[in-house]
Image 1 (tube, rainbow, N blue to C red):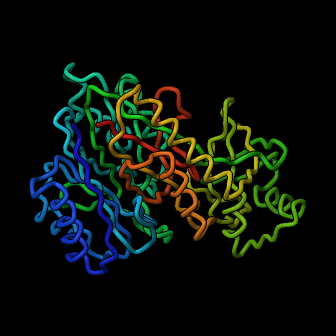
Image 2: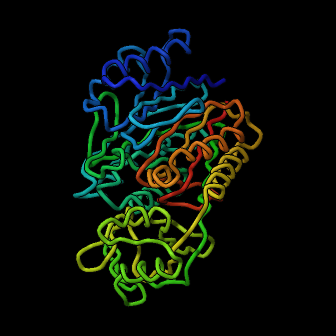
Image 3: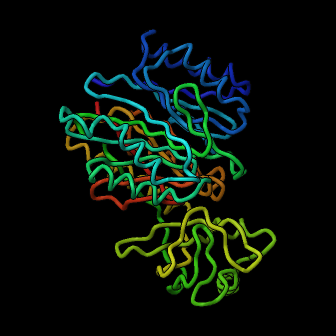
Length: 389
């Protein structure tokens, strides 16, 4: 039997926000401590350590993890400049956390250290292994981190999560472990269970251009498409489709025209963020040289429908187990593009999940690697993880 509690606060002072979350969670648990608390907090909280210490002091979870975010939500509400948390107590599950620093300098070593901390690699007591990954996406190469962890764990773990946010400032993000808030790091919450956790993925974007070959790229910098400066390709697409495009302020256009990297069975999305002096495009995640890409388009209806299908896919993976809680991650760019209509996506997920409590946040990229799912590190994509009773 899994016990769950969800709380959200708009208290602006960090200690009060942490205390409020802790009090609401502990009250739902009849004043006994949860095994794990997962917390998401806006960058408006200038002192994450104070928030985390206050939360921990009140409800004293065995494990506390989370990250800074760019929009926070539960089934009961959503917004910015807030904090939310999901608490779990599940005697049939085992939770542990691993925090590792130094992504920018040696992500191979970080991945190896994270995998070494997974207890499931040393025990056969549990049938299913899942890890919630929260990473500093501004450090780059989150896709590579997920790939390395998949190899190091022999494909026996499914991964879900996202990149920490900072309210679309793109300056500095943090991951949380215990009462620490750390940049240039990744935190992994290992979840071992004998019932499957479901993971679903969906984005609702479709090609809106002819195929484009990536002729030059370096990490998160897309230099050229079809041997032309990338910005010229976007300018041509804007002219063809009758959309305004301003090099000095391209984000309004980019939010509605993202890059889709063809994978053969779908499209992995990358959000353009800005125009580089050489005519290249700075992206929110890596675009591989030689890849076939498209400029993609979508609608509010398609985005909400994709999130609902992601929730349905996650539920289907429980193999008959009753759902008890869920985590939802979607892109900061999705919230910026949809504005108030982002609530339509949350409503669509809520309708699928029914009375299942959920919490989540807008992230800088979303992580999903699970059997039968479009895997890796994504942008502008809804990722739903359902936890069984």
